[in-house]
Length: 357
Image (tube, helix red, strand yellow):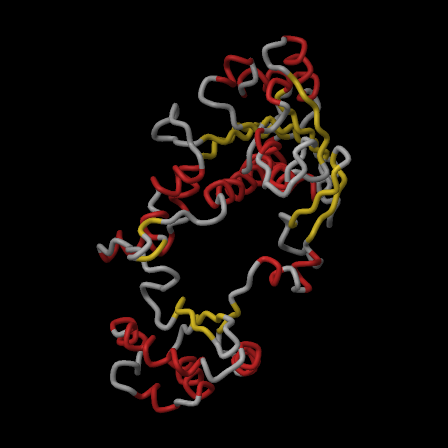
């Protein structure tokens, strides 16, 4: 499967995260991906986004490596017409262009869809923008997390609004961009024409609001910061410390699962308490529920409790740090290594599916 796109050629005129992440998806699956970087800035800005522990003397950061794999890298100056002509040459037999130009820059450089389709009528031109509602506005991930309602919902009443610790708006946009490109490839198979795709971080963020948006649109409920808790289910998102000091989190979705949890924890009658018998009353009385459950977890080592719950199909999980995550067999299988400009790089695969037949 890793060569499924071996006949595709992708020109990546995009930097930072969302565009390169989409490009990496095609590279992983065999496409020839040529990443065009700015010669004026020593390449993609993320090359310089280094942790204090990284070597300052090379031009490859861990952040850059996270979204770049199996690509060719060329550095061009778009103020130079010869360099623009080089892009035209690359586009002539390309299948896909991925870009994230600021508003108007594609026209300024002559790298807009209208110009490029005269060179290659079958070209799929996928452009990623920030705000559709305010095209000239600079869009960074935390800005979108704030504007699209994610920060307001995230955190706790004590912490106030908190951003998610990933550039989640970029990641969501990369998924939308990939889906759009795959859709356009399918259309091209049917009609033989190129297509112009527009995808924005703003629309991608709004599309991901899903059930929280519907809670508001249908029930008038404005989601409040409640940490990991779920507004519709309890106990769901509550975390507890075990006897060894390690943490677990609950994801109890049914009354039957709650009964089994109480039995495992050694307090079977709790499931029959008036305020805990059904999910709806548990949601209403979740603070009392937490107080009742908390001491029960301190009777168990974390792994012992996990084993009991997994054996009885009760959804409980260990809260793992990054080093613990990569002790997992599947996580190890998804690590991709590559030497980029003399730097040994590692990242997690963007491909999380298998085609069996």
